[in-house]
Image 1 (cartoon, helix red, strand yellow):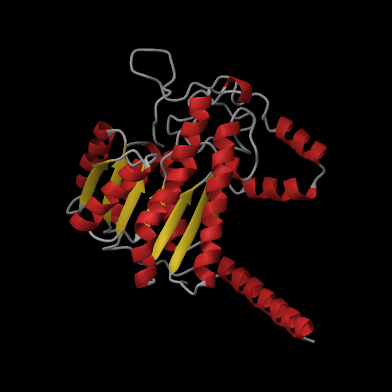
Image 2 (cartoon, rainbow, N blue to C red):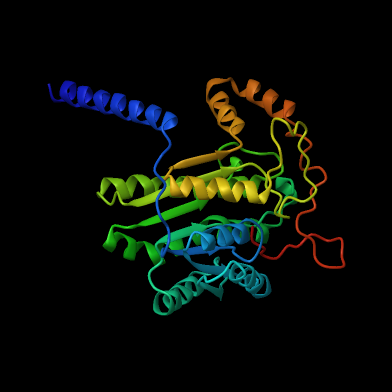
Length: 316
């Protein structure tokens, strides 16, 4: 009897939430105010992190920048200050090192306050076939792209839980929902980052901390420099995305408190097909979209005055 009642309640909730989601697709969601919120962005020294910092500053947020690249971080700080009377703080931090994360996090709490929006954006890419990927770069990819999320969340989530207020943002990737040729280590880390963020979303809701929001971003390749040299076979279907466009979509997703945001939308369709089709059909789709060749001319971020890709940590 209990099973029947429980099942009816479950189906009723499913119908209610489905209707709610459908209505919100038609009626614009109310966007939350982030003025005064303390927004910490890892990998803020360049690329997408820099664009997000500028966006949040214009919304009146207090911006905290973390990056291993001090020079790039200070340049972002300068660009943010150009937006007017804004508060921005820059800290040099290697997010892959647990004790360094905890040390710099303590500085932020003391000098700025409790972080209320945490954006885990720092990332690196090796861009080599699996057997050509050096062991140390596999370890580094995991340390930067996913394990660092554990340390930053450990550092800042307790204050959010105490206040039942906050927002966790995970910059994953389309490569975190669909495995991509030539990106075995990167794709694995982005799958892991997605899983970590999604698990936290469920965990926080089950302990009734529903005012701590979670947003998981899964963009296709972005023109940040990380994927220089990559080409899209059919750009009208899967374009390499502009930084400003992606940053605006991320801001929209955060302000509308969306849990999932995939860019471009065709990637959602690809994901549905992946689960519906036979594996060989999925492989055919990947080949059709250029999965065999898009990494063939990969360069990545380049060292100044050389043709060798950087192997050291560099953020999005």
